[in-house]
Amino acid sequence: MNQQLADRLRFLRAFVANPRQVGAILPTSRLAVRDMLDMADVPGASLVVELGAGTGSQTGEVLARMGPDARLVALEIDPRLAEVLRDRFDDPRLQVVCDSAENLGEHLGGERADVLVCALPFTSLEPGLRRRILQAMPAALGPDGVALVIQYSPLIQSELHRLFTSVRRRISPFNVPPAFLYACRSRPDAG
Ligand SMILES: C[S@@+](CC[C@H](N)C(=O)[O-])C[C@H]1O[C@@H](n2cnc3c(N)ncnc32)[C@H](O)[C@@H]1O
Image 1: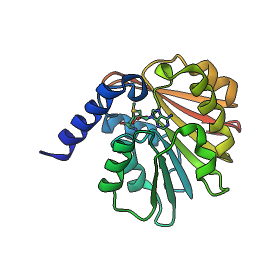
Image 2 (image 1 turned 90 degrees about the vertical axis):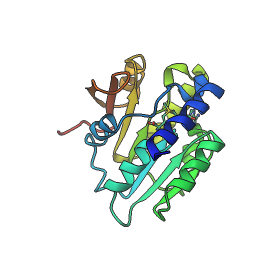
Image 3 (image 1 turned 60 degrees about the vertical axis):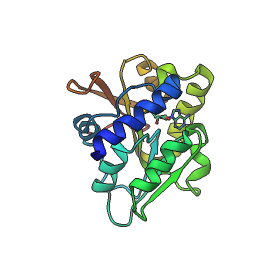
Image 4 (image 1 turned 135 degrees about the horizontal axis):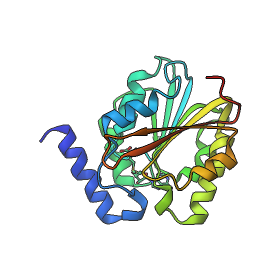
């Protein structure tokens, strides 16, 4: 079985076991991942954080773009998916953490992230958990950091505007379903 098919089956199994936590039946498409990462300077980042890494569709592309001395901390709440990530990526720059994204600050060793990549299904998460995760995001970023968020609806857009000074939006039409991509910054976006 090829890697893509195996990932899709693992992802589907995780969705069937916990639909609201996984929030999608397919991993993010390669095209949407690329569109999303193009919205930030991943090659220039020292610390990248990923929330809800799943089977690693974004993890692999982040590692491919990151510099040799950079670090990626990937949080995934599902222990089986965290194990898939550990098996799949043999890369010393990657630390897979099996914990909830609301605790992300505890896993950064006192550092702040330059880029945060987030594919959490905010619209299907319990509202208190969603609020705690969203509030933890700007606090985990350095002053020039950027949070990249992918969603399948614009429902959390107003919350992103409340939390960040600058929110840029892009649509990735060929993802299934079409995806809303956000680049959120605490400083005004010069670009
Ligand atoms: C829509 S999937 C995205 C997976 C992958 N990043 C992708 O783009 O294909 C959401 C992922 O977030 C994980 N997740 C859900 N709630 C979480 C939480 N509170 N903390 C960390 N991960 C969580 C799920 O287990 C799932 O793997």
